Image (tube, rainbow, N blue to C red; front, side, top):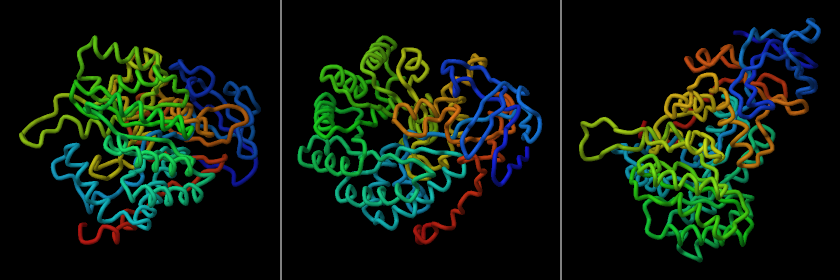
Amino acid sequence: MTITLPAAGSYTLRNASVPASVMDDAASGALRTVDIAVTGGAVSAITPASSSPTAGGIDLDGGIVLPAFVDLHTHLDKGHIWPRRQNPDGTWTGALMAVLDDRQANWAASDVERRMDFALRCAYAHGTAAIRTHLDMAPPQHTISWDVFEAIRARWAGRIELQGVGLMGPDTILDPAALRAIAKRTKAAGGVLGGSTAVHAENPTIMRRLLEMAGEFDLDIDLHTDESPDPAASALRSLADAVIETGFTGTVVAGHCCALANQPADQAQATIERVAQSGVAVVSLPMCNMYLQDRDNVDRVRTPRWRGVTLLNELKAAGVPVAIASDNTRDPFYAYGDLDGFEVLREGARILQFDHPQADAFAWARSVGADPAAIAGFAHAAKLAVGVSADLVLFGARNWTELMSRPQSNRTVLRAGAAIDTTLPDYRELDDLMGPHL
């Protein structure tokens, strides 16, 4: 479907199909047919279809309109290194070691900056307006990457709203001096305190120390938790317990939470209830988790036995704030991806099975928009309402099955009411960073 917008002035998008969940009814799976008036780059009116004058409108013929996407969990500093540093066996450990090697060898400021900017141009072309990225904090990377991030954030202001998370491993969190140094630099950058922990005997201590440090510096927290198939992994439960017991009042996000799906039902349910009580939000990374989890580096003739994702439907049903996100992009943790919010929604529906009953499926449109925006506190709220900037993604598809059956590469992306160039950057731009590895 070809859409031509006026170069300037006011216009109306007529006969648009918009999920009620991104307007005024968060729990609804319904589609509403409306006319959307745009004036001066903002939404000036939303009315039932055909209720306004017929002249001057652009007929979408039932095409779906979504607010620009929000990506709550990415790794811009790792992105696009796959050509020079592949995962040797596809496992989580293989990815960790490959990234460690690449970071030590290559992550100078110029390298990180160019790959970050490339990734953001991809996200922008696909229709994303806000991104939270985790940044590896292993010294001296904590100084390099924060400096680059701050420069990139300023450069992209007005196009993509950016948040950064200082990502630490358990050993760093348990080192008081290192934890304080990273917390101090994170605060200076206006960032979020982060970490990664799964099967670790010190999980209760780790969570306490993180919460104490975050409280001291008035920082929110965003953790990688239980990114493991091991049912003994307990970071999510430890985190929820620590938040409740300390009375921590900042926003707390737990990413991955894969092990929850491998735990006995009563154990998983007890954790879910505790998470709901704590107010911790959960973000699932369906594409990366299905790609990476349940690989075996010994028996190579083997099909995975489980999807690797957390119990997102059960968490949401229990009242836990949830979202889905991209995670890694063309790096040893995930060899694919392009920071496309619609791809996350489309693949999330298949992997997490939130597509039935299909009458309720469009309630999940919020999982790549309004819900992560609220969790992170982005200015871009990813809702369609009068007075907000007309940051929209227009599709020719008219219903769920039309939308989900194709990658929608012909979508139209509006920012402040104007159609942007959706041409994606060419990977060849990064060839000189890859050296002889292409």
